[in-house]
Length: 413
Image (cartoon, rainbow, N blue to C red):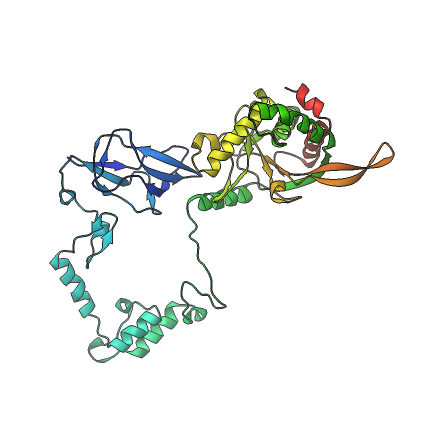
């Protein structure tokens, strides 16, 4: 007997996903627990295993199509069971043969085809008028004819076009052109759609404020060079980011309101007693933010190894949804792309995000002498409902103090 498998609820309030890749075809045998499809949901791609053994009778959606939680995505049957034994979904009824993900669809019943033809026959209009209606995007079924026996005239179509559209839309353009030239239309879906929704929620909910400063990281660079050899022995790729994470965690401990969220419904500020640091990763599909859990309890090398693993998973789109949740504070490194300062958007429901710019050389007065020092630009965005400007400056001062004297960072471990 056929078994309809519906898209399960992956949790986290998600309601839909996009079919990225089918790993089986109609007619293939499937074992229980075998992964049969990859679905993009939120910012991750999840692999869905088969709940039972069987043969694929139907795939419920094409690659690139969005499916809702609870929608049938695959139909399994017994060996030898025919596809015809499975009722076709109502949306697959066509007047003419069509090709779908399961091959050619059956023609619609004759009575349905006749019914459609009768409806078309009721529209009295000559071919020239029908073409004009298509060009002006007028549905003839909504036009009342003024000609003999209700026949629709050219004037009727023009009048309907004027009444149904703004004047500027009278000029017809193709999907590849606007009024000024050629364009390319890219569907807003999947990960890009999720990013767009998150950014709108953050900017419309959180009153952003920002502060910028610089840290002299000359000593930190020297320490990193020394530590790089030992990291290589452990087969760990060491960057500045683990040092910044340790400095940020220590600063969050001193300034707990920066490590919080706002519960508007209960009018409460929730001070987090744990430190989960999100790190923005640039992927070919858009920005992802894996979260390093319990950053306080990990040393520099442990952080470096975990950051490498999470970044690779994010770029390959195989990261687990749990690794994208639970952050209390976020760091974004636009300096890796050559940026200096920025105004990063806070990840709701966090209350702050720190941006790192590219390190550059700068003449600095040190004990009365001018020296060329290595400087790291920092940009902090914060939720002004929870964090005042003075507190944001104090937080930044703590981060800068630790980065400028990296020995203090190691003492925090």
